Image (cartoon, rainbow, N blue to C red; front, side):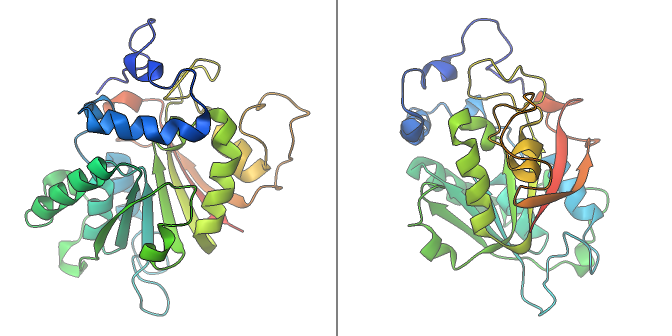
Amino acid sequence: MTDPAVQSPEKSWIVGQFEGRAPEAHGISWSKIWDVGKSDLWDRGKTSPALVDIVEKYQKPGEMFQPFAADGRRRRVLVPGCGRGYDVIMLALHGFDAYGLDISATGVAAAEAFASKELQNPGAANFGLNHDSKSQSRGSVKFLEGNFFAPEWEKDAGGKFDIVYDYTFLCALHPTMRRNWASRMASLLQKDGLLTCLEFPMYKDRTLPGPPWGLNGVHWNLLAKGGDGIDIDDTTSIGKEGEGSFNRILYVQPERTHEAGQGTDMLSVYKRK
């Protein structure tokens, strides 16, 4: 799938939906896009191959994506801006109790409808070459409607998370909201919890209008350095390496990813301090 915001030098339709609107009101715009049936502009049609591969690579006991905690409970994963819930379903099929959050009621309904069918007969895209179906038991799936930055939905989630997965969520936010994104991620995760990010789009100039907004260098600046995610190349930027709320423990280029980011996507895992 080609990224509609960068395939043409002309301003994309989706960028036009956010021009002139306060960043705090962008959530309403995303809901309206769902309501008018334009979710295909970002819908990849399947779970992230990069996430499938990294989860299956590190699922053994003691590894970062082992679905059970030391006390035997299932580990809890959140996918904000989950859309139709492809990644939520995949994570549940790999043993996690998986939660999908979306600001759109239409989106949540679409995710629930898709999950009711997909969980009965999971497609091949949910699994990679390292999937061990014999030793895997399925976790639960729950979709929540709410604003990521507001607390109301948390009571239905039941507590903090062990893992949060971000793909095309940060890039959908106005740059002025990036620091709030980082602090919110830290507040939602358990101590030593993992923030897993499929960093996209890495090829887009950060100065170009979004969404999606270019993110090259943004995750490191926000999470490890404690910067603002905007003045990345400025040596006087607020924050220094190690002052962020996270330590990066993995940074790789995935062999498989969605077509829109093939060759440029990076996959990072950050541990909350």
